[in-house]
Length: 231
Image (cartoon, rainbow, N blue to C red; front, side, top):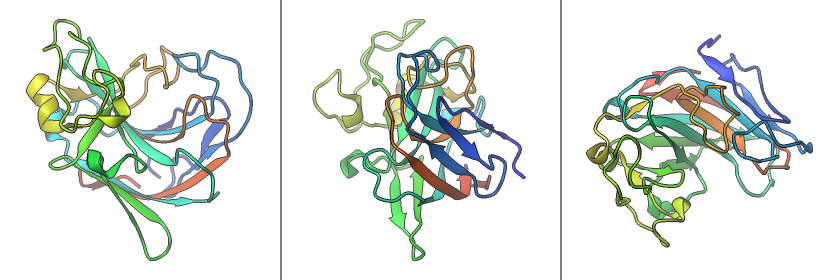
């Protein structure tokens, strides 16, 4: 049993065997009404969240890895990916969501995914060398209470200051702008996360999104965070 977890899934999605060594992320194609997300999304999003990084300084975050098997192969689009909740000022005044997605362009350096001999895949993120996608970027000058303004991405895409999925940031560049940045369990108000006042732990493994209507199923095993096995 791994008790430091919570199923934060939205709409017709859930985690099977949440507290086991091999939880399964499920999303189903049910229609919904707006109101479950902070934004107006109607989709089905499965979120397995881990209480492992609350108030952990970003500078002490070394990375994670997880192994996954697609139980419904051939489904197009988003697979299984990870989010981190960043308390950028270190005082709860502003939050950003960082994403690590196996289908992001390799040039962004957004982690590594390999295929194992048994057909499973392992996604890993190395805090020393890899970059984070920041939802909507660190591009809104300034974040309260008076952030540094424009923060150039480590790997810039176009157009700027929009197009966040095509830009990525190293941990060093984030810390240069926000030295007090830390991971946090919070109600971040992100449009794609459960409606406030629901909080999500700082580390999440996810399938689906706020517009997803596809059947998805992924089994997770061998999850590690900061070098510690948590599944």
